[in-house]
Image 1 (tube, rainbow, N blue to C red):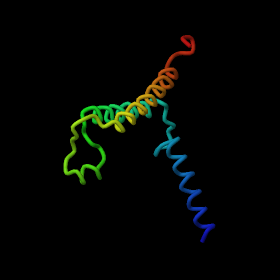
Image 2: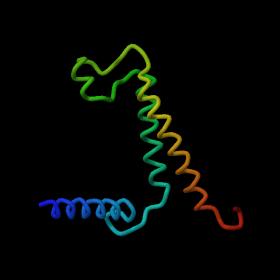
Image 3: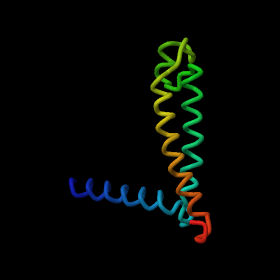
Image 4: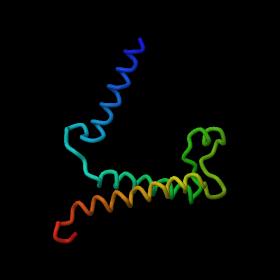
Length: 103
């Protein structure tokens, strides 16, 4: 049973790695796709955190409201971290689009 479990975990890790690198159709994705996703997610978290909108489903259910009186700092910090990631991906992606003579 243990060998089967290890084999199943290994297959899942290889499948996730392959899919994250090549996608569903075998096309390798560039760094601009994570830049798009990171930009969207950072704007979502920053906007919600600054506005006081709670993105946590459990807390919204318990408090019976989605809004708070002030800034939600953990959402702001996650938004800043995602923004740093997005900027790094934008730089890498745009550098890959520039001709070699401009580098």
